[in-house]
Amino acid sequence: MKINVIGGGLAGCEAAWQAANAGAQVTLYEMKPEKYSPAHHSQNMAELVCSNSLKASRVESAAGLLKEEMRRFHSLLMECADQTQVPAGGALAVDRDEFSSLVTRKIKGHENIQVVSREVTELPLPNAEEPTVVATGPLTSDALAEKIAGLCGGSLSFFDAAAPIVTYGSVDLSQAFTQSRYDKGEDDAYLNCPMNKEQYEAFYQELIRAERAPVHEFDVNNPKVYEGCMPVEVMAQRGTDTLRFGPLKPVGLRDPRTGHRPWAVVQLRQENREKTLYNLVGFQTNLRFPEQRRVFSMIPALKNAEFVRYGVMHRNTFIDSPRLLRRDFSMKTRPDLFFAGQLTGLEGYLAAMFSGLLAGKNAVRRCQGRETLVLPRETMMGALSHYISDESVKDFQPMGANFGILPPLQEPIRDKRRRYGALAERSLERIEKIINSGV
Image (cartoon, rainbow, N blue to C red; front, side):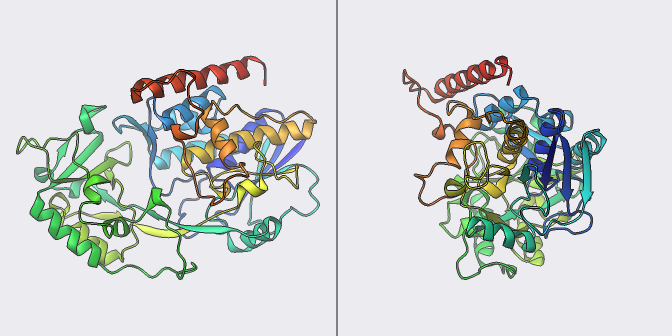
C-alpha cells in the first residue's frame, strides 16, 4: 500500500504521518532545500511563517477545541507543539525552530516515510497509481500552481502578511509592562507597549502615510486582502480608532506607571523559549523595511528596537473547494486525489494540520477500499470539512475555526462562555464515540 504526499508543510507532514502509522509506504515530496518560496527560509519541514501562535488553549474556544479534537486523533503536530511550547498567556505558542526541527526528525525517522527533496511540477504524478495528497500550501510554486489550476479549472488568490520580530534586549522596559489581558495566563507571556492619546495619534498619522513595498507576482489591480491577516496599515485606513478596537485594544490591561488603562497598547508575544525574541502581535505589514523601522520606532517602548525580521507580504493561493472537493478532502472527479491545508481555503495553522490528518487517514482508507472518514458537523473538524465542501457557498473565502459554523444546541444557552463550553462538550463526545468505534 503506497501513498504520495506533495508538500512538507503542516498539512503534508500530518498527512504523511497518519498514512505511515496506518501501515502505508509514504513518499513525501518537499522542494526545500532545492527551492524556497518567497516566505520560507528554514530547511526544516513544517516551518511556521506568519506567527508562532496556535491560538487559544482553552477548550471552550474554537481554536482550543480544534486542537483537542486533533489530540484525540493522535496528531503528530499537536504532540510536537505541546513539547515545544513557550509561554503565551492563554494561547499555545511554540518555539518555531524547535517545533519544525522536531517535526522534521519525526518524519525523517519514520520507517514508512521516504522524503524526496525535489520540486513537483506535474499533477497527477507521472506513472502514479496510488492515492496522492496535495498539500503544497498557499505558496505553491508557480509551475505546480499552473497544473493545479488546469486540473481544477482555475484558482483564487489573496494576500497575506507576516509581522516583524524584535529582540527582547532592545525593548525599553521602562516604557513597557508585562501582563496578560485580564490577567489570564502567565504575566510574562506578553510585553505591553502603551501609548497615550498624543503618541497614538502621531503614530497613526505616520502609519497611514508610510510607503509600502511594491507587490510583485500578484494581481495588483484586484488584490483580495484576507481579513484575518490584513496588513496593519490597510486596517488603519479604515478609521482613526480601528486599531484601538483591533490589535491595539487596551481593554483588560492596566499600566502600572499610571494605574489606568492606556489609550492604545501594542503587545509583543514571546517568540522563542529563551525569551530573546518577541513578535508584534497583529502587525502584519507590507511597509518598506526602512518605513517599518521609522514608524514602529514611534512606539515609545520600541524607540530603539532591533528588528531581526521585518514584516513581509506574500502570495496565497487556494482552490474553489466547494465546487471541487468532498468532505473527506478528495476531489469529486478524482477520488484518488486529495487536497489538504490552506490550499483548500482553510485559514490558519490549525486548519492546515487537521485537514492533513483527515486527508492522510482517508487516502489510506481509499487504498484499502474502505469508506472514508467523514466527521459529524457537531465537531469542529467536521464543521470545517463541511464548509470547504458546501456547494451552497457562493463567494468562497478562507475560513478558520469558529463556533459560528457548528450546528446550534437543542436547548439555547444565552451566556456565551457556557454556550461555547456546551458546544465543546458535545463535540468531544462525538469524537470519542467515533474513536471508540475503532476508526
